[in-house]
Amino acid sequence: MFPALANGGHGGDVPAPAKARCRTIAVAGGKGGVGKSTVAVNLAMALAIDGRKVVLLDADLGLANVDVMLGLTPTRHIGHLLDGSCHLEELMMMAPHGLKVVPAGSGTRHLAQLGNDGHAAVIRAFDTLEAPPEVLVVDTPAGVSDNVAMFTSAADEVVLVVCDEPASLTDAYALIKVLSRDFGVRRFRMVANMVRNAGEAKQLHAKLARVSDRFLDVVIDFAGMVPHDEYLRRAIRRQTAVVDAWPSSRSAMAFKQLAGAVDTWGEPVSPSLGRIAFFGGQGASLAGW
Ligand SMILES: Nc1ncnc2c1ncn2[C@@H]1O[C@H](COP(=O)(O)OP(=O)(O)O)[C@@H](O)[C@H]1O
Ligand SMILES: [Mg+2]
Image 1 (tube, protein in one colour):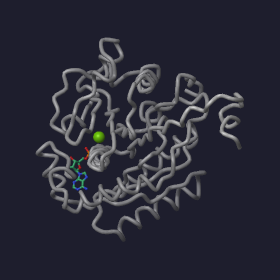
Image 2: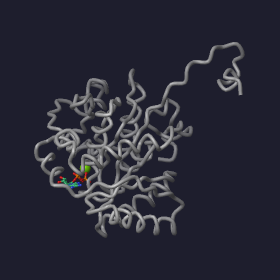
Image 3: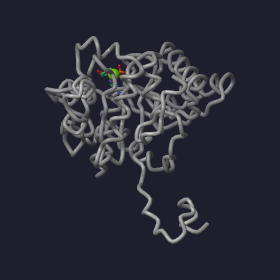
């Protein structure tokens, strides 16, 4: 097809160069304590170390963890964005390697109880960025609430963090069920966290894929594994990312591998009309919520 036709058939117009879409990756898992924030922080940092322009959004509103994990002390948070007292760009804090962090605000009950309109406003605020990042990583809270569903289904990719505990598997399954049945999410990329070896990680994936294949119309890809690593705990205590503090530790190597794998996931596609999505344009509505 000629470019002019591909551009809507405005004969004679010079088509504008296609703007690469920002890839958005939500990190979810269902259960608390499985390593969602750890994976979100280290994946975002590993991508930033690779030279990508990355923003990390802490969507665990009211219980912010990301800023603590990175030793940041925010003076403003998403609440200030929502009451109009600052712009999204002004909220962003600089972490090492050029990583930008949008802090969630801790101990703020009204943020923890924000309704769908508030969540939609946060997601839409990203449309206003003059210089969108190449990758947006979203750390999501535990549970299967509307909050989790909204931020997760607004992303291009869902990374599911699972560890070898029965409750992690059942909670991940519950989240997959809600997101696929009610929000049309079909593909999930599973990261096995705190495992001893690759065999254990693959087994965990097989368990989750077996039950999901049987009962739900979804694809669960194996995206990688992060070993249980004392250096990672040490990094958390020091309020740094392990990929930054101990780049040759086993967990850091795993995060770098995961960051490298992101490039093999294919180009993000534009969200369907009517769906609220990060960088989805102004046309998206609250339909379906
Ligand atoms: N691969 C790992 N190796 C060792 N400890 C880990 C690993 N992943 C997570 N942890 C530990 O688990 C705790 C909870 O992780 P966190 O990322 O806060 O979970 P979530 O965000 O899912 O609630 C961390 O404070 C860290 O001590
Ligand atoms: Mg967390």
